[in-house]
Amino acid sequence: ETGVTQTPRHLVMGMTNKKSLKCEQHLGHNAMYWYKQSAKKPLELMFVYNFKEQTENNSVPSRFSPECPNSSHLFLHLHTLQPEDSALYLCASSPGTSGDTNTGELFFGEGSRLTVL
Amino acid sequence: DAKTTQPNSMESNEEEPVHLPCNHSTISGTDYIHWYRQLPSQGPEYVIHGLTSNVNNRMASLAIAEDRKSSTLILHRATLRDAAVYYCIRGSQGNLIFGKGTKLSVKP
Image (cartoon, rainbow over all chains, first blue to last red; front, side, top):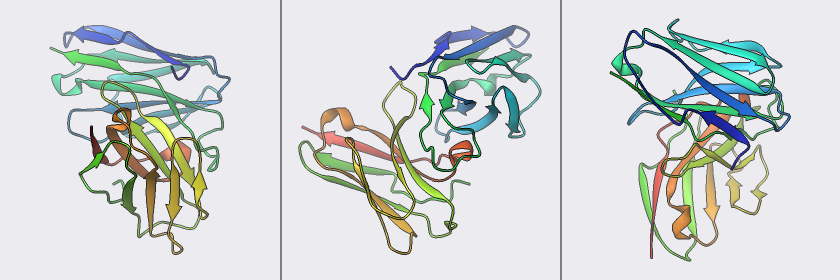
């Protein structure tokens, strides 16, 4: 138990559906992250939020829309996804902001396994 | 581009030490070296990180070469629960680029 909770753990959706992934941390952390882990590929950093402000968007398609209403919650809104978007989506948080080099530790949730039909 | 090089897989026997190598020959002076591991069906878990000096914590030790172009993660006594993919990453916490890692198998 890392203190980072992701829901749902599993999600199956059609290409025309709209769904959302939720991430919650009550660790008092200042930064939150979305990562994507596809089968047989390394983890890819998608979005970074520091103090609720988005500071990184690694060329992620617009069909993925993040939202950070406060420093404890992070959402990933999904719409008109493609089958190749099927993956494990991981949320993480860190005590310092993403620009801090020595606060080292990211705390990951267990991920939301997404299947797009 | 992960910018680190690790063996794809390694095997160890239970209760024996494990040395997991990592090359990062293009590391900059401000990049930290981070290690994470990912157990099956779980998110990655922080193991250890360091800059220049060797580091120890309750999970592992990190030995960093003097020229910082390589490092070694040391598990002092491997257990079956240490079977995981181990990632060596250079950079800052907000920009951790994961590679494919080393899949560690531990035999009883």
